[in-house]
Length: 290
Image 1: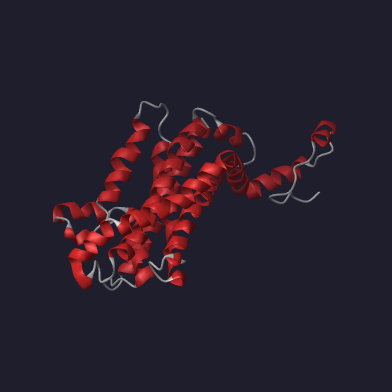
Image 2: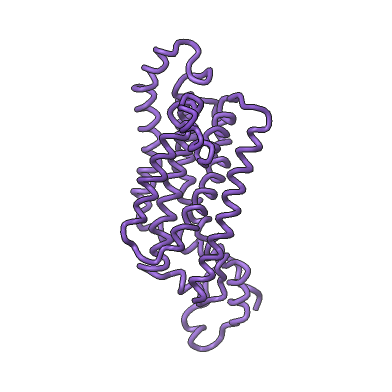
């Protein structure tokens, strides 16, 4: 029997009982495609709340962009005049950053209680580790499932931008790869810390309160970063949200950046993802092999 392909039906229970199963093939498939099995497991579990997930994922972009655009945006544009913010209407300036802020929030939430729970409350990681699936496959597969969770609200933002003429629809599609890169960087970063936590003493909520919210406020989301005092701008410089928002603005309306800054933004996100991925794998391996 050849290795089982991902997505194919598992051998029936009767085959396992009778012993008519090629265990080497099953193990080989797990070793080769374990990361996908982990992702598939979590994606299938999302079906239990797909209605609320879809409603929030599609409705939030519309409410955010229309609410801010018809409210705050009108006031800003009236005061700024023809020059707008960054040379465009305020809503056009704001839209890419709001999309990226939603990605950061979603990725951090999925990697907070999802990762902690996988070790503590419903120890699925230990069950997975009892198979040929390795620690790095669990880590990578988990993040792949987070990308599936992120892509719906991200695509909804792109759709709202295109439908309401906030920006060019074709250029807005570039927000998708930028958002997925941000999700990977933020996801691995949060995972690398949460995986070290063995008890819940309320510290998991700190990520939302003391990391996600401050980064949203001080990453040039609602106004250009350079309008902040210089002693606060460093928060944006180390924020993955700022780097992704700047890339999003370049993609959507061609925001001007200093030479080489596009490469700097991309490399920052890639480096953050790579380093924290390695840290996550090391922590998972230590905890699972203990």
